[in-house]
Image (tube, rainbow, N blue to C red; front, side):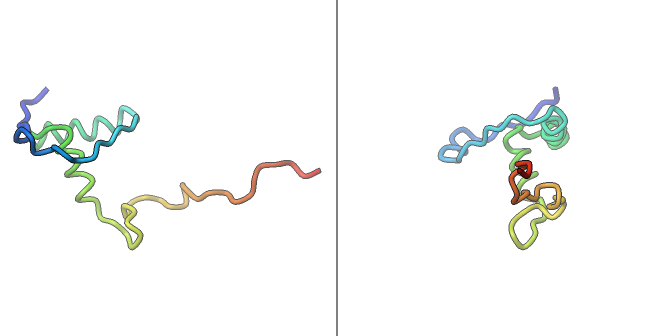
Length: 79
């Protein structure tokens, strides 16, 4: 593990917390970013999220929206 700088004590007080299980590959991106920049995992996640280019709806521009389209019909077989 690379030596990382910590945030100033108390600088994160009042910040909302994100807790979400993610695939190891996704976590590794955050770890690699933190190691390369010498910052904490929380600071790395913040850098990644706040620098992602967003589309007009606030969704990261690189996201394939078709992959997340909801099917309006319920999968119920016809009688």
